[in-house]
Amino acid sequence: KAGVTQTPRYLIKTRGQQVTLSCSPISGHRSVSWYQQTPGQGLQFLFEYFSETQRNKGNFPGRFSGRQFSNSRSEMNVSTLELGDSALYLCASSQTMGEQFFGPGTRLTVL
Amino acid sequence: AQTVTQSQPEMSVQEAETVTLSCTYDTSESDYYLFWYKQPPSRQMILVIRQEAYKQQNATENRFSVNFQKAAKSFSLKISDSQLGDAAMYFCAYRPLYGNKLVFGAGTILRVKS
Image (cartoon, rainbow over all chains, first blue to last red):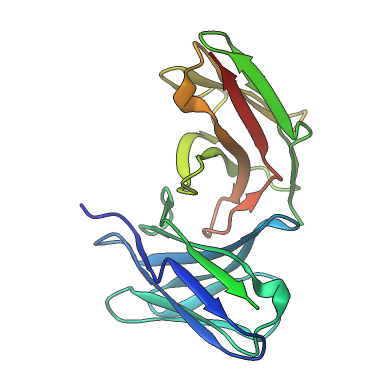
């Protein structure tokens, strides 16, 4: 089985722009979770989608949003980018509530 | 809210020796899951071991084992016969019984000396 894939792997944006990151889960996995990893704040949960519905949400501003499609692929969007949004964004997929498998991450740099 | 604390920012171990990484957590729940994840320089998060809180027996996966002390809310990872490939950042994580939200500790960098 192919693993979790994330695109793009690297991204450079400027402040004020918006960005969309994509995550394709392992085939058969219906849950996709997103995490932000920064040196200062560590790993923080953004949100989880299951069967196209947001099931859980972390403590992030409304500029961070996501969605899930019928094929379980998920996207997250960050609008009005700030310097502090520079981070590694990790996505993880799982079956209903099983082990989470992580993708390689998208490294976002905001200039 | 649940919290996970890893008090060792960095640890070193000699190849073939044993090392223990510490983790404590706080929760008011009685059932939950605990995990140790490894993140090598490639940044790929890899599950090392998991423990269900309702199981009293400590989980073991080859050279990796945990010491789960539920009353003390402690969950340490022991790596035996350390190998160069074990060098990585190790994260302790908590997950409630329902849902997939992982709460991570700050991580411990493990260095393996040859």
